Length: 216
Image (cartoon, rainbow, N blue to C red; front, top):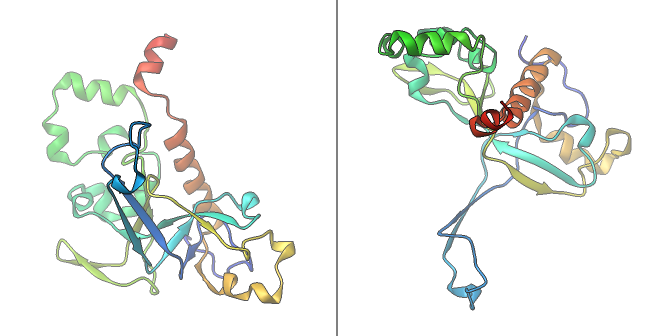
């Protein structure tokens, strides 16, 4: 079960929520001390209200009027080129055999040495910065590769900080905080929330190759 049938009356890690603003900042370069006038600095600020967002603040840290959100976005068509993913896109969320990470065509295009090197690493995550949300009737249907689907995903790299006085621990919520709870659309099951926690932890934990070389 991907979603919990009866959501808790509190915000939780992984919740699908609605009614929140998302901001993307695009800069030409970091502002240096040589920049005398800030008004000459070039940047682009995009403000959107996505249909749905996902809570990426751990359950025990949802308090003090601050929360981290990421927009729920459509999946990419390239994902469906891999038959293993095409059968169930949520497989991207879990560890898999190395040869399942690539489409058959890409796997066959690798040399024997490359295949052996990949297999030697054992089970791995594919598409490490993405987590797929299962289809649900509240999510808008769209067409991808001639298929009508309701799968959506989040990108761990795309996170926004939201400040709102209604964001507080569950034991401190009052009737005045009803809009906060009404913004909650879906809640993950305990098992799915664990999968999200495991994958985002891996995304931040994995050491870069240059560090591994130095450690050896």
